[in-house]
Structures are given as structure tokens and as C-alpha cells.
Length: 530
Image 1 (cartoon, rainbow, N blue to C red):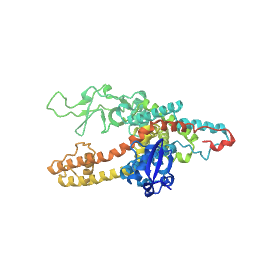
Image 2 (image 1 turned 180 degrees about the vertical axis):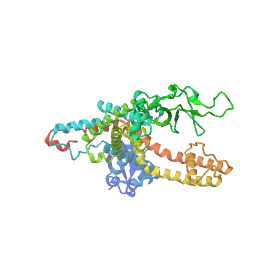
Image 3 (image 1 turned 30 degrees about the horizontal axis):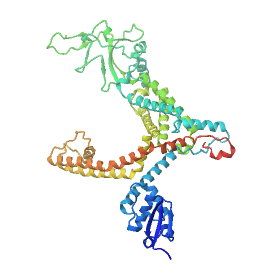
Image 4 (image 1 turned 180 degrees about the horizontal axis):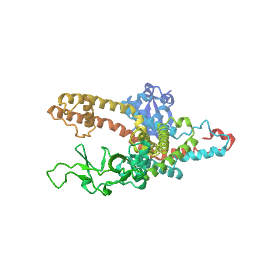
């Protein structure tokens, strides 16, 4: 005869339960093994008590000290569906599963980044070449922790920063030098500027100097007057790119050629009908000596980059050229290499550098003018995108990039709310303020974004009580919007950031560094990475 009670021994502890209670409970492995009067169960006692409590109370709860993964495995063993969990514990289990899914997705993304897929051009016929390519890629394109790789990483970072420095400070007047007289003369000849023959000899005699040999006269009497306007012997145009110089030319027929006299060296001064000694007298009109004419010459006075910047730019171009060639030669998959936007930008910047150099080599005068030629120089600033590649070598950079990609939908919602608030508050402010404050609704958009992000430049300030009220509501709503959404990204980032410094992640990372290993045996050739 079957007893009405069952004796369960769990981890040395004996528990007696009512058989009918087990039979009336949900169908599981426990109801199957309890057909006997005495059962020995070799399962964790704490988790089994939760399973037993489910039959006793009808509510399935997870032990507080239990790992959700271990408890989920226990439910699988007892053939109990996780959907039977109470809502409080179900939320805890779901949060754990979401976290594990995030970590697994992060690990998978890192494996794809570190994955080395053989190229179609794998040079399989030459083992030494294949090994050489693998060694180069381990330095230039891998994320391993080898000493040579780290040194190359530091050198690459230095070159990127130097390249950005050269392009940026090439626009700063402190790092620009004036043209030399030879450069001025060459520019005038190429441009066929009027008066080139007049100043050619003088500029050639002071070729390497950046100072114009035509100095201002010390005598006020050497000033000329033209159409009632006072004209000095050296005047600049509006942007300072050209200097207009009045030059006295002795056109005496006894001379073989016209001779240029700097104004301060003219032995015979200009004669005046009136003098400056009479305070109330009208401005004098100078009279030139016979055979002496005055000619106004336009001389270029642009500024170019210092030689230091040119040398630094040449060094960076050489480095990036070598880097590009090495990457092209050793990259495991050319197709995947050029699907990366950073690699494409690298190639564009490098091409722009060489086109820039070729143009300067054949048309040196192009570097003196701010026209389309400057665009080629400024395109090189996109090399700053290499900083993202550098950031991918750092754990925090990888985590931040993955967090942004994983939360792209939340970012879209954030941008959507900002756009909604921007349009609303800008329209209300446009209606409440005068046109002298807010010229148009697009200007109001700018004000709304600046206010919602709590930047507040102060260039647009509401003056009416209604406008100030709108400004307060706009700023507070912006604070609440960011306070509610930013923690989503912060929690995701902190979770992954703490994970990448765990021993498990370090172990996986160190194991992946051994992927680039060439096996010479023909029987293992399929396992070769390159």
C-alpha cells in the first residue's frame, strides 16, 4: 500500500511532504520521481526548497541569494516553465537575461572586430610571405598587446595629432610668414601683373628678404596727392594681400633703361607750390622734376605657412603613405577593409595630400591665394577620423561606441523629443517677442536648442513676460528630458565598462591574440588565418 507521505532527502536533510500535494501540483519531474515513498535528491537545497514551495503555496519565487542563471537551469531540470515565476522574480530574471544578451552581443561585436578573415589574395603559395603579412597586420591592424603594436599605436596617434596641428595652425597668422621678394616677383610674372618690369631688378637684388626694398620716405614732402586723396608710397588693400607702391622712374633718354628710385633716395625732392608750414594753407600739389614720372605698382604681399609646418606635413604624409601601403598589403580582407568609412577617409585625405603637393610643385603661385586650392589642404582635416580608430584600441572607446550603436533607437527618441520641443518653443517665442529679438522661426529653433541643452549663449534674450515664461519652461523641460534619458545610456555604459575589466574578458582577449599564428603543416592549412 502506498503511503500518503513522501520522504525527500536533499543534501543530507530529510523533508516529509504530502503525496497528494505533489500530485495536485503542476506536471514536472518532481511529480514523476515522487511515486516512491523515499527519494534521495542531489540538487542544491536552497533552490529545491523554492521548487517545493511552489507546490505548497502555488507561487514560484527565486531565492534572493541565487544566481538567476543557476535558478533558470534548475527550472529546466525540473521541467518547470519560467513563465510560472511570480511577477517580482520574473522582472529580476528578465533583467538578468537582458544583461546577458547585451554582454553576449558585445562579445560578438568584439569578435567581429578582431576576426581575421582570409583575403582572396592570400598568397597561399608562399609560406614566408604569408607569415610576413600576418606579422605586419598584427602590428598595424590588430588590437593585441604586443610591445611593437603598442609602440606603433603611440606613433600613429602622434602623427594624427601632428597632422591636425599642421592643418589647424596653418590658418593662424602666428604660424604664417610673409612672401620673399623672389616669391613676389615669380607671382607677378606668372600673373602678368602690370609693373613687373619696373620692380624686377629691385626685387631680384633683395631676393631672399621678406622686407620690401621700397621703404617709406622720411620726408613728408615725398607724399603725393591724387584727386584730393592723400596717397603714401606704400598702401595695402583691404585684406592685406597686395601692397600699392608709388615709384618714381627716371625716364631720361641718356639712360639705357628706366631706373627705379625708392622714394626716400630721390636726391631731388618734389617741389611744392605750398608748404605745410602754413597751417591754414590748402594741401600742396607736388610737382615732379622733368624726366621723373610716378608709377603705381601692385605688389603681392600674401602670407604662407612657415617652413616648420611644411616639414611636419611632409613627415606625416610619408608616415600615412607607408601605413596605407602596409595595411593594403597585409589586411586579411580588402573588401571589408574598404567598407569601413574611416579607411575610406584615410585614402581620400592621402589622395588630397598628393594632389596638393603636385599642384604646388607645378604651380607654386596657387598656394598664395585662398581659392579652391585651399580646399585640398583642408580636406586633410578628415584624417581626424583616425582618432576613432585609435579610440577603438581603448576599452572605454569600444564600450562607448557599442553603447551608442546598441541604444540607437533610444537616441532617435531623444532627438525626436528635442525636435518637438524645439519647434514648439520656437514658434511660441516668435509670436510673443518682437522681430528685433527673434527675426524668424529658424532663429527661434537655434534659441530653443541652446536653451533646452542649458548652454544659453545669451545672444537671444526674451524681453516680454510671456517670452521669459516660455524660456523658463523650455529650460526646465530640457533638464527633465536629459535627466530621464541620459541614465539609460549611462547604465548601459557602466555595465559594459565594468565587464571589460573582469578577468573573464581579459582571458578571452588574451586568447584572441593567439589567432595570428601560422601553421606550416599542410594538414592544418585550413586553420591558417592569413
